[in-house]
Image (cartoon, rainbow, N blue to C red; front, side, top):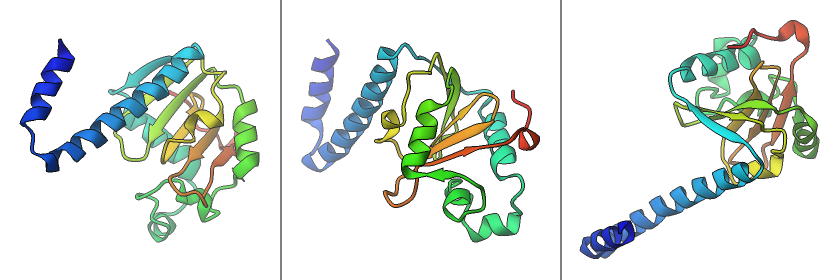
Length: 175
C-alpha cells in the first residue's frame, strides 16, 4: 500500500527534513481540495502545456500591450503582472466591485494562469466558479478564452483583487 511506503520513507528521514515534507504535503492537499471544489461544481479541468507560452503572450498583449517597456520595468511587471492594476496603468475594478463583476460574468470557458508557473489550466463548464473559490490562491489570473476580461487574486491583502474588462476595440483575437 502506498501509505506504508510513505511511512517507511518518513521513518528514514531526519527530523529537520520532516518540515519540508509537511509543507510539500500541505501544498498537495491544498491543490487537491481546490480541484475537488471545482469538480463539485461540474468544472472540467485541463492543463494546457503546449499552448501556455502563447496564452501568456496573448494575455500580456491584451491587458498590458499598451504599456511601454520602460513603464513595465518601473512597476516590476515581470515580477507581478498585476502591478499594471495596482499602479493604475490599466483600468480595473477593485475589491468588492471586482469580486462582484467576476461572480456575475459568464465563465463557461476560462484560463487560469499562476504568476510563477509556466503552465496554464483551462476550466470548462466553469460558470459556477466564484471569486471566493480563489481566495486561498496567490497571484492567480483568471480570464475568458476570448481575452475580454481578467480577474486577479494577489498574494497581498491590500492589493486587489482586480477585475478588468476590455471594450471591443481593445480586444486581441483568441487562440
